[in-house]
Image (cartoon, rainbow, N blue to C red):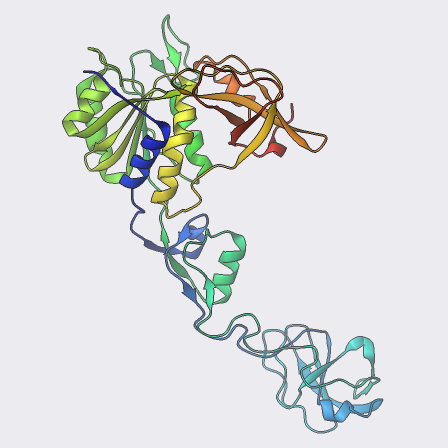
Amino acid sequence: MGYEMRTVAGVRKDILDAVRPLDPVTVPLLDAWGCVLAEDARAPYDIPTFASSAMDGYAVRSEDVAGAPVTLKRVGSAFIGHTPEGEVGPGQTMWIATGAPVPPGADCIAPKEDVTSTTDSVAVHKAFTAGQFIRPPGQDLKQGDVVVPAGKILAGPELGNLSTAGFAEVAVYPKVRVCVISTGDELIEPGTKPAYGQIPDGNGYTICGCLKELGIEPVRPPIVPDDETLLREVFVSRAPEVDVFISSGGMSVGDLDVVRKVVEELGRIDAYKVAMQPGMPQAFGSVEGRTYFGLPGNPVSVFVSFELFIRPALLKMMGRTDLDRPVVSASLDEQMAGLPDKTRYSRVLVYRDNGSLRARSTGPAASNLLGTVVKANGLAVIPPGDEPVRAGEQVNIQLYRPLEQIHA
């Protein structure tokens, strides 16, 4: 069976058209961190609900202090979280703490720096106008105002604002549940002494790390050998607890490529070649009603494929609209060859040089050299063509790490 050759843009579009945001769920507020809010959260009441003091000082009547300096009688105190000790009548005042409710009768605050007090009286040295140094009800939000809009990613400030508005739980798009399946007789867990021909499972850990960056806790079953029965059991048993399956390798035409056979049996698969290097063989479909991504076997191909296709798809499933990594233009330090009929994604280190961005290669183009990804912070996009991009020319680079995180 042959494979259709397709463009990167075409594959990406088809995948993003096929996936949908997960159904919203209502979760406790703290569990909503990092999720996308599914609906506008509106204030059920004014925030704050009461007038409070913006200063430590004395609650006074503006008409009493209009002719300052004046001496007023102290009649009590107002503390945070407590009802004021009575009212402020003509010629009276009350000690008040910052954030405490303003007592009835008072309409402004005389800061402590502008008074001289004794046990029973307070000399106010300046005049103050009605409302001065008072935070009115609804200063932050009025009842019905949007506290946090739908589509917002919930971080610390959003959780704080929602909490202030009384939300103990909210409706969000949940984190995608992803099962990462590592298959192959040659694979062993890291830390195990390899026999001849065995290798530690690097691809599974690469994918899991990329998922964790998205706030996803992956499900990772034990390594599955090249056995159709065992692999089928993993797909069937894990399907109820996940939304997505990801595997790497096993997409070629061959007697030992059991992944493709099992996926075709349990669902559907669209296998094709993508006009890119690294990462040409790809597969997309469904297994047991769950979205399925089949990646190439080489480690750099796995990373690049995840960045281009899987990452944006998972973000969309979690309600995100910011699907793309930032792209910058940088001047190349050395020439980079293109490919006649493929887009090349070269691993580069982007750095600042006298206010400009420059990029240098982090190693050979071979797709087994994952260390070149570790040393880099971006993928230089070299368009198809016979002419190389020469040193000093500008090239677009898709960043997968902020520039400041690289020190090399």
